[in-house]
Length: 424
Image 1: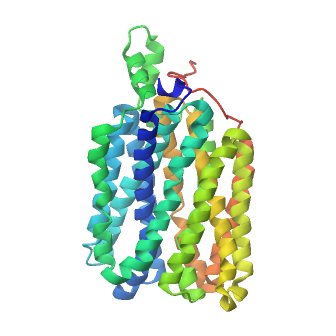
Image 2: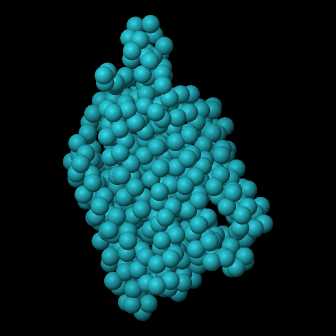
């Protein structure tokens, strides 16, 4: 099997390339709204709270999509559902450009979120099930690097192209990732670990008691008493990470534009700097994760992001006089988000093959859904404390993340098994 090979092959890199691209455009679509909501708010006369609610609904939809696509992926295969996820969020993004009012935009942003919800878990599961165990952290980190590049692309398009062509056409042109589906169908292999599991499941040598348990719906199995503790731990870990992220990035462009008085083009450039930090953070996390372990890497990176948030808030007055002072804390905020490279390997190493995608999608995307409160809470707090006050919540969630990872065992280098199940 691919995961048992010592050297990386063309198949490894092909799987990584397609999952990386799918995740890049997934994040691009989600973050693009942070930029386009500024002209949308101006054109329709809607408030920050209303815009935040639309953002929140799209995040809730990612939770639903993550669960649905996760279950279907464990049943019908990783590759098929990867294509379905990309096609769904691309259609949703295109239809956002046709919206004539707030309610239509709400519906299409929800569809976009639903499709985006399946992308990360399927991609990370594919990479972690196929890459060698000694290089699993690096493979997952490279795939995760699609996120900051997606944000960077959203910064460039939202900051420079959208003002010239308008928000509607920007949405429509952003549906081009649908073309990836044809390429995936043509060239990307399926996870052979999942194929081997399906073969073992259908064999007559598997005990009936085991087959009966494995045959139940994966979404039910992740609440079995031997898997439930890991489901809870994985969910809470993702909730703290998601809240810290979305508290910052849902409103950071507006913070730089409205409170720092940056022009839209400068806002895009400054956000781009933060995503260059994130790119380095995601890639370097993979190195440290495979070398010193998952847990210490999580602690190191989450506390780095907390430092960046606190520093940015403390130097607000100085930034007004000299905007370049914002660059170091923005870089630290981006670099600290590198801890997201650790979720895929940890989930793959604590969850068995038959529910791996379901459990991964449930934990990561339910946390995305729960984090819908972040844009709304920041919008509400901004009325009293300003956006800087609302953004300060991110540091608290970073600290909680660093503490919660201590409840996990160290799983660096674990070999993934075809069938893992505890019989009562």
